[in-house]
Image (cartoon, rainbow, N blue to C red; front, top):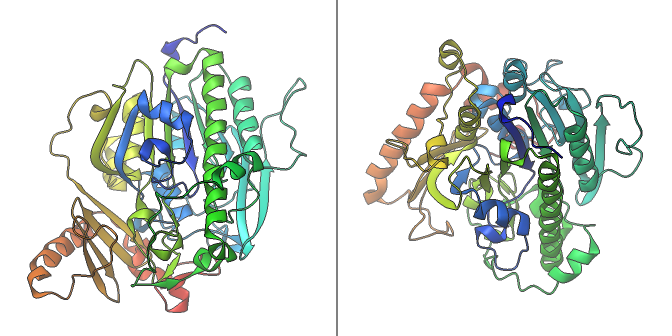
Length: 473
């Protein structure tokens, strides 16, 4: 095909995974996982080594990336499910402007194929022109179900994806490619490909891949004892923990099959001649423990809720041929809120000063890093929250505050497995005080008191299993 006119604006392909942990990719150091597409994107793009989610669970992590704001601003503090798809009958994000809305207003044609999980999934959400939504959930400890809604535009010719077949990773790619082939070529596009295969339960993935991974040693998963500051909950109590090697083989296979699907998308961009005019961003809503610390799952895999590094670390790769300075590995600490700003900065879409002031965005663009420049005075610290649990993490230390409840301090250099809580030592009190002051200043500057995680018990229900409804943060 002919190369598309770059004057139309920069396209964006956002590949947003569900439960893909940073440790689970060859380009991030996993010696047994095969991820050639991700390796290619990282080798020819920019790999962020220290990328974090602001909240280690699906819906709030996604909301942070798509709104540029933290849970105590956008108001989603836990995963949304079942009858709680709306907030007292209102859309959860009705007060927000997502990337989809911002780019639609800027003239982009906007599509979703895959997981949304931010409320109202059965209906095309504001800003989107094309909508194929698919979600995976586990209603009963290891049994899985799939739900979907296809509201894509009509096709005047045969060849559209067959929506009658079983949904899954291939169908998500089929609809994503359908969007790419049928879109208005006179406008730049923004496409979210939301893959869900890495989500639990870890069963039923392609046998051709699982059988190979069953021969692995899984040497990259530390043989940890159970996390001493929490007991198993939700996915940590699934039957899969009784067959850990099988669960890991299935999870590794899920990563590889998604890697194949991302390859299909890259090949389609190449075939259409728009690869060089498309920013590809690969990331995940949050991390995941697969036996790490004895935990299976993310922040809600324990009670009390956790902020383990495996729960909050995410893969983050940028690739834009001939535009970004490829082959880089960056160590700056960034979150989804920063990535929101970076995507907009990279494609030249601006937010008005009045809107920036009103929304008090906590993120900052790091686009200069992508093109080989420096970002002056980049602060090497990230903040997180899950309900009324809050965290501040520097390159060396992590403080976790439960409001109300205990405080934890970990030295991540001396104790990378987060086994020893140092918060009760006299010599650490000044450090805890300094980091707590930094944490509280951050939330004072940004949170919306009406949606603050500190009053999460008073906020609308997100699902039927919220930790704070059980007096068990």
